[in-house]
Image (tube, protein in one colour):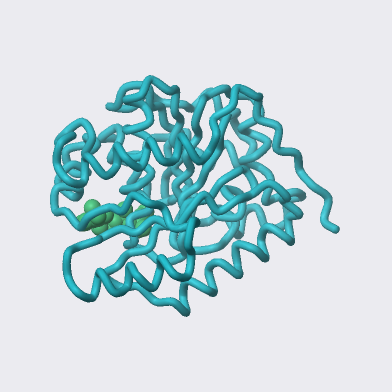
Length: 264
Ligand SMILES: Nc1ncnc2c1ncn2[C@@H]1O[C@H](COP(=O)(O)OP(=O)(O)O)[C@@H](O)[C@H]1O
Ligand SMILES: [Mg+2]
């Protein structure tokens, strides 16, 4: 089982859009995929099911009221299931504050399930939900919007992810790659892309996601772009991204084995 999360503390960079469409595109290859909606806005849940804040949700799992496999819902996409999120997740930092191993709740919950891919959507913050997502993941994808890119913000994010990795003593968390989103053929886009290529080299994913109004439309239709408009530029990009992710994550049949590490 491969577990990956999509993280960036900035909002509006295409995290949820990437989770939903990447999962759908991996599902189209016949691989059993689970999306976990760890954002209280529940946008991934809505996009994949049309449901607004169904309960029980991931909140109840993190609070240890129910086990994760009991709340898995089918989605509108083939081979894709979802663990929904709801607004109560926004209080999780406070509610888990005094609990032991509070960063490891999600990782523990995943031990009982069996999917080929688990893809976790995270909120625009680096609080406990994102920490739980990182602690549960072998890979992280960081989407970067070319419309409002800042190198300073990016460096800070990478440093923080390293810090969280060190703090939690996670040895096998890897940056699968930085994903360019909102790409368009303007000079500014091309220049920024060039800067990112220099900075990240092979850690910049080859696939980039074009700016496309169709992504918003497919979200509202509760349909992925790879189902709604598979041959559109954005549809093709997410299909390519799935291939790149499958290749880079070296899918294995080994059971999920992330263990909680002791703080060093
Ligand atoms: N490549 C893109 N081109 C155009 N609009 C996009 C693209 N990716 C996402 N969007 C839209 O931008 C908004 C923010 O995207 P979203 O995936 O929700 O970001 P995040 O989860 O990082 O906050 C949404 O309305 C979404 O439909
Ligand atoms: Mg989001």
